[in-house]
Length: 376
Image 1 (spheres, helix red, strand yellow):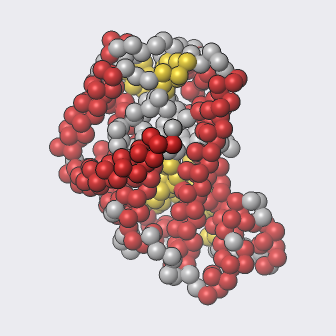
Image 2 (cartoon, rainbow, N blue to C red):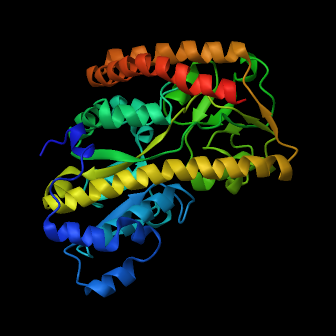
Image 3 (cartoon, rainbow, N blue to C red):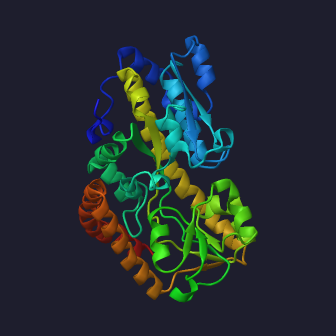
């Protein structure tokens, strides 16, 4: 079955009457609230017909990211009346945080929870499906995925690897990272060893920095022990929970990930073997957890930002100098054009994103930006 973007835009048409009754009786939010076992007991729990395993790239119980995967699994169990259960394995269990792509493709797991830019070495066309420097924000990216053909293009990329991919949630705008020293010019980036994945790493390499990718569980130690000079992770809530404010004084605003989309990754053969009502349940649960992650990210960053100013006055929030931003923007265009020249499929994805962003930028400017101006 070839998935189309419209498949995820519509109310699932394939829920059976029994499935609809289960959906209405239990509610998919019950699973997220921890009520799935009680709901199932009330219905008369049965052995699951489908018992899947999901590999994530995150540490156990990692806020927002791992919680989203657990919420999704609980909702699937509740909505399916126990017919489908998904066991979520954190990176500490399967020992391959950057190996989720292969674990799912090779059938060791039926699905995964990760981020597309980790797989740029597998296929360059995957790099813009998570985040693009100076690209779409979360609202624009969701619009492109759900209504602008983005989901269909994403699966055009993944299907040739025996996989399918769907939105798992957006972090919204990410911060530019933690630095031990202040960045006053491009010279300060030269020779800097920084943890930063995806296209942003390629861009920083063009200005003389050394990008590296390190699993989440090793980030604090790497910064503390000077294995790296700087790092970016996500935003204030997750960053402070990792303790980066204890070992770096400068916290920069973002440019590289204006709306980072996580992904549910499926083994295509396993997914297509499911009955249509279970597929519909998965799609609804994915979309709900995607929405919830964006809401949780914005809320928790909002609350943590105020706490950071109060509890960690030593942290100095900075913006990159104008000359640095200009050069990073210039190098981003060069990197994207070069990658598009090497991969026709990446070029197709990039053309679609650029066309939509050219229109969305106008509306975002006259709506969000103007509103923020008058609200200030």
